[in-house]
Amino acid sequence: MALLQQLAGGAIVLIFLADIFLTVLYARAGTGLLAPRWNRLVWVLLKGLSNLFGRRRGAVLSLAGPLIVVLLIAFWALGLTVGTALIIQPELGGAIRPSSGDTPKDFVTAMLVAGNSLSIVGGGDYSPHTPGTRILYLINSLIGASVLSLVLSYLVQVYSALRERNAVALTVDSMTDCTGDAARALARLGSDGKFQGGYSEMANLASSLERVKEAHHFYPLLFYFRFPDPRYSVSRVCFVVLDLVTLTETALDQERFGWLARSSAVARLRHGGELLLKTLEIGLPTQQPPDRSDEQLARIGAHYRACCRELQASGLKGGGNCTDQYVTDRLKWELRVLSVAPVLGYTIRDVTGESE
Image 1 (cartoon, helix red, strand yellow):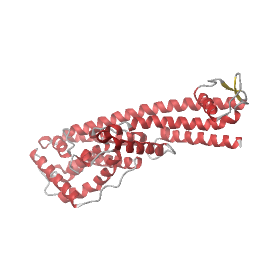
Image 2: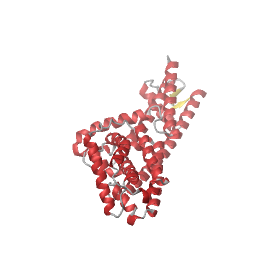
Image 3: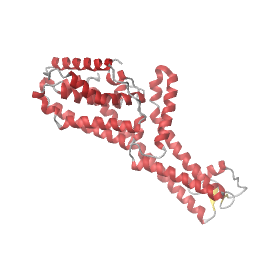
Image 4: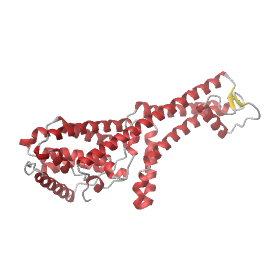
């Protein structure tokens, strides 16, 4: 019976170490044995709890990212401690005992000894007295020190990536004059009908977007960092970028600006936005978007016509009536954006700036 308990404890330790390895070192969205499920569970619970706070719901959800980080570390620590305690408990009173006095053999004591062995060799009143338990203490100390170092470096990378993501979101928002309107950004990029400088800005934005995509691929915890201000929403960034690309391909005079629509910068923006959406879909429990409706088609068509008027007012000649093409192209990615946004507590208006 004791042997089975110790084997079970060893299996638990190995599972949690594998989970830490896949999350921190292997670092791919959608991988991990326990962490992705644990993070989703915590998120679902926090999201349900946030519904009780009414207008303060967004502020409560903004705590989700840091709380998930803390609870994930606690989850890993608890798992390693429980597994080690299962190994240690049968050895209490024999191979592992205090320097004086009786040795309690309950599981709580085993948890205490396990926690000490994972932190400092020989820490606490209990010490190993056989070669096997001394090796166990040594292995535990190495595991504890290694996991602590890995987790700390992982957190530094997560928050560094979060800062860069926010910087990209602010760049996109500034390009739209803080309106979230891609037509406004396109008009400013092509001021006086000259897109040479705007092309460079689009290329730089594409590079930044690619880094944000890779950050979410390597650090899935970024999914759960949500800010009350929708300008920091990844869904909004994807929406503005993909709308900018779609307008470039449909609302501009292709005889004059076709080179821009066919340029590598625009292709990279489209590809980067779509890949970022795909990464979010892998990492988040996305919701089914609303069915396509006549109201939605009318809303998109009205948005396109308003964008064309704004571009013409800024001196950019339009490419004719391409409403149908714009609606068709936009529906390919808009439904995906709207399947991600509600998961993080954002409305259609938050993401698009349009009425729901």
